[in-house]
Image 1 (cartoon, rainbow, N blue to C red):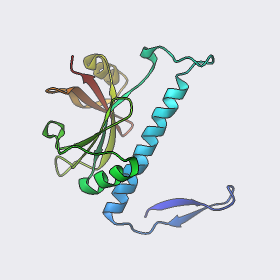
Image 2 (cartoon, helix red, strand yellow):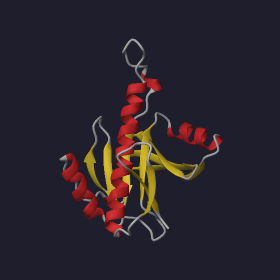
Image 3 (spheres, rainbow, N blue to C red):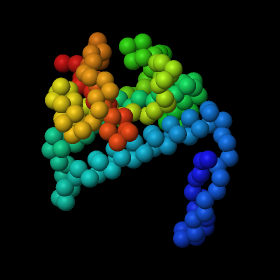
Image 4 (cartoon, rainbow, N blue to C red):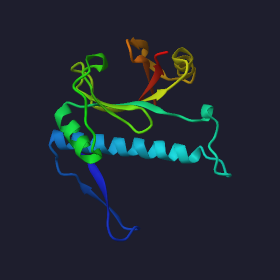
Length: 179
């Protein structure tokens, strides 16, 4: 049984209602949209938090950059149409090197990629890939911190190298740009 919280006019009054069953397309679009909003807000928050009291930015080594934001969904066309309308962007044709993802530019030089699952067992997910200088070192750091390495450093010709780790049930990607 799924629930959602409905906050009425009074902020103190919170009631729980049984969620009506939504179609898979609507649930996927809603989940993807919410995840993107959270990721973008997190990026904005991290940027603001990186500023010092004097209003100057912190050193480059103290910042994080989402290089690739990946959405895996069974309905790529619906997700691409939604994000095209929401953000006024155009998506590429499928890029086979990125698993058939259709990509659009993100502010700051990154990319958003929307693709279908690559195997029957792959669940819909929104995964951020953070830019790192040394992917081998970053993967070793994640492993030492207790993360499960789901995909070790893997070369994508002309794109760079990526890796994926899982910690606390959250899939996170790492990306090292090509030299």
